[in-house]
Image: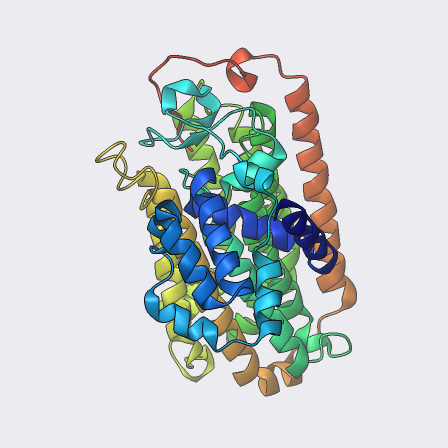
Length: 441
């Protein structure tokens, strides 16, 4: 049987991508121990590749297999599998064949807060930390393991594909290449795909080393600053009140937002150098770095909702979605600043329900409402806007975004270089400290 299993695995290797096999292996490793997985996979193989009655006889002869397989396969399942043709059985069998030694994969060890350097500490999170010197493969595997970062990873990784799907759908109904009116929307859709993906990667690979932790979040902050710029593109193009169109604020709205993205990245990256020695100042700088561009970007929206009255205030169906977006944004600020609820019960929300997970969810939901509001404004106001405002230019949209991307990458590169020459033990410690003070993240 062993040579046959090996040949079956070779067939699997030839027909399916390594990523698919790796994902399947991770799922098996998470659900079962290595010993359990071998018995369950063997039972499933016999059930699929052989006749159901043969499988049933083998299960009866092996109480251990029966004990494990009965958890996954009911008696009714036998009748269902009997209906499958031999070709389907063979195909599914190849999907399940794995070399036994691959099933002995060991999940990364989890540590408590006092077993990792202070740079990794999170307020109110007492357990579920990954090893501070994990390999890249360990980081990927840990995303399928229950740690205090798992939900953070997936709450931004999955929405990335949702926003990418929305972009692809829009690309079939809108002309993003020749119709300049759609260019601000294209830039916005790209950045709302980039920022959650970057955040997911940062949370995945931040445990490789203290230095890698800082660099990962440098990129995370840069992506968020580009998201603020993307919001400015759409707000300037589609959300600006009629009475402000072609005003000084309207003309310089996007260039100022691009400059604000540099301030946002610079302050947020610099705050990481202060968080261990001056945690409150670090937290205040980081909050200011993101609240400032948010307030600036939303000036037209605040005016439309709170201060503008009359026919030229554009009170359309987009306003309700904007209000939902602002509500979610306020929730994200509250969660980021308060560390609620884990500050009330440290250790109780290490894996589910802590503030950063809720922060991610509120941010994604808010972005969804913002996207819907922008699309509504774009469609409802298109006749008036195209008749009264000049169309966006290539430099005014893609050009400014490229400059902003390059500028933010230079800032991140500068802080990374400075990080490499930074000799403070608190900043780049790699040994385990037994302190009790938690950092503000």
